[in-house]
Length: 386
Image (tube, rainbow, N blue to C red; front, side, top):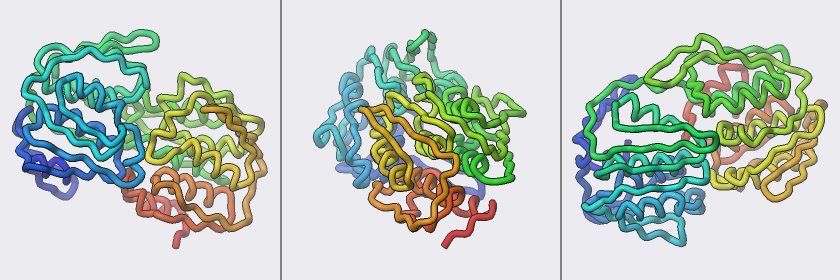
């Protein structure tokens, strides 16, 4: 909201919704030498660049220490192809962008399976005359569903490994009302908390269970859990449902299919915690993308698991986790030096509540990035936190 205000967009906040007054595709009014700080949010930083490809003034995009270590060439390179003028700091933040009034549509092969990259290009395509084509490795499709819901000219051809997306730009769409459903990435911590706790069951209502997001449920059910999705309904093209989960004593190891990586990419930290309690050796493959998140999550996961006494073998971007169903902790553990990653904080809380030990978790306010009410919610479930 701070960012769109800097772009000259008016909004007001009511008790339970925001009202935003848009001025069309060219409705931004920016000051000269404007600075935007995305904090720790890679999604904001990468997507906002796509909306700035026709900015009239030079804009500088910054982020916190963690975000400034992440690769931005995956979005700056295709945006340059549209005609935007972009200067980066060795492919990282800060990034300076000044738009072009003569944008040209592009054809781009998105090979990473990055929904952020794909969506940034799709937003730039809105501003661009003509037809932009994206050959995109399978990833989350929320932006495609939103475009369809708003009747933005979009054509999607689904292939086995890739989607061909065509967008006709400079289409002015009207205002709309949207109720944001529950986020499965936030839910995942409570699914695992219940799964690893004794004599517990939980229902989480009105969650977005888009098929590109339910990898964690498929993985945990393959490991022996019984997580059930019920009361499905369609809302604005998205599938909304309730999720129920119960405690499970006998979790089994998994050889995780690579095809599930994209649909569980934000949940692997908490999945690894389940693997630590599983019977047998779990295998996970091709997870280099984890190191492109708010922190180098694959590196941190290995360090974390070893800290709590779990044997881990890493080979390139693959890891093997030697599970211990009797894993119980009684030492003091201190969580720090993780680039203030919100998901590391939440995973550590679940570990403390289910495995034992005394925990000191630093930078707990980092949960505000994705889940400001995390601690209130977890306390309602019985946690005691100082």
